Length: 452
Image (cartoon, rainbow, N blue to C red):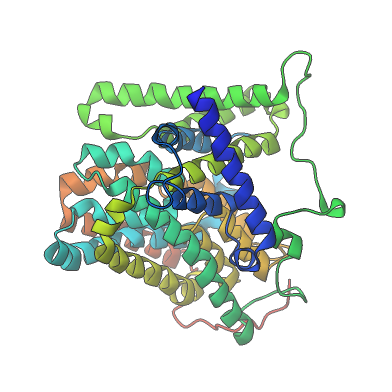
């Protein structure tokens, strides 16, 4: 009963967040997801604010994020037709190289600031540097999923700080992203813009009028046999079980793997299920929209429960080093968007760069949202390139294996060797981009080609 009531209370907060998004202009302009708004409301009425939420409800909320992140990652590749590597590379290769440089740069810059400034002045833990990539590129779900790893290496504040980092990242993605877009519009950096130069008002409010509504899923199995949603959730569950089996195998090999989170392996489990289903030719019964609804539900509940249960005492204790490293992280991503992007993308540099900026600081949805502002009809090839890039990128960074293993590597190798490793990876992918003739050291910033 306690679990049921706690979920009902959480759902009520989600509705309040949705109502506020639909009626407050500032929240609409910021494009804040309702789950984030609801999370901050719950935090405000929790123990650090009005103290109206009982402890037993918070106790039910705290484990949710760490559980649901496995559902999110297990769903990523399900229902997706996976193209050949040649097609992925030809379309999304430059996007991948840029993404790896930007993502690994979050580790490189944060590690430098941590070892040169934050450790000598504030005595922070060496794993403090990991909160930038985990929060920015990874997001709230990844931050919650890394709690066990942080605890295992003696940095118990890591998960809460990563959740705050993810929140800063989302806000930065929207606010700074829109500033960059407005500058780009004035300086003619964009290849295509609609006359309205923006997003329809209903997308700002989040309430779809009748003429624009669409079906959110398609039934592929008969309800007399099994409910379609149940069928698709069972597929997700199999993917998670495969991931759990792999994790159990790793733990049997070496005790150090006890600190490895489940979610990146759940993602690999989903990829295995999808590839096996393609071989058996049963993917015709997989509906991508249904998998997306499962992912979206898990992500909404994950975000609000994670924010609502943040330990603000930890944030206060680390306030100044946190402010410094967040400022550094945002500055790095702005540098990538305005300096590296025109030099690493052979065409449509701003569209591709702003999409990556939104994803690398916030979440994939915000990256596509920013793309929609400058390319509302997806007439450039950015959306396809970004989608192909994510297929290779996500198993490693932004919640993948590199993200999961980063605390272990920094703890075992030390900060300076980790700086060397991150820089080496950045350099390799920059050289790959250079060898493919995607790099232009003297780019033309203004768009002067034909509008696609």
